[in-house]
Length: 167
Image 1 (cartoon, rainbow, N blue to C red):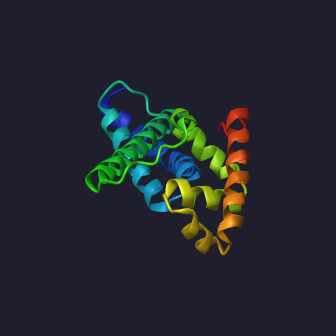
Image 2 (cartoon, helix red, strand yellow; image 1 turned 135 degrees about the vertical axis):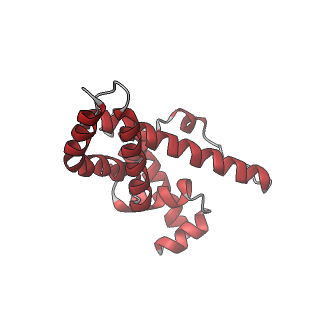
Image 3 (cartoon, rainbow, N blue to C red; image 1 turned 45 degrees about the vertical axis):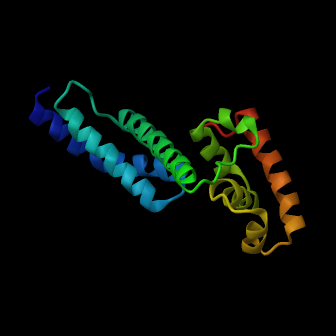
């Protein structure tokens, strides 16, 4: 296939692939600007691939999107560690189990949790807020929030270990 034919094929697949790629990314990050940026990066990679021998298809684009999402999470984690080093605040790593989590499975499992569990875990562990702040945002007492976090961690761990969060 020549370059002109490859470009035509990419344009033909774009309308069909765009909602699938965006949906894949949004389902995993739950953030519109991030999903939009990563979708754009995915299609930029597709345009670059047109000149090579890569066949651009929806599954190929989803694979590229997955890599873009993982790279995004790695950059974000690296940036957070850098900020922590610069500000002399240690990165909280009090449970060695979390080192072994796969970022995509984590996002899938979080999406399957109930909204109260997802909110508590996200505020506490993704946003890094202390329990009293999480309690204030959720309209709960500190004690009730600690109990909610225990239940949410248990629910998360059960789903993660059972593989039910796999896409």
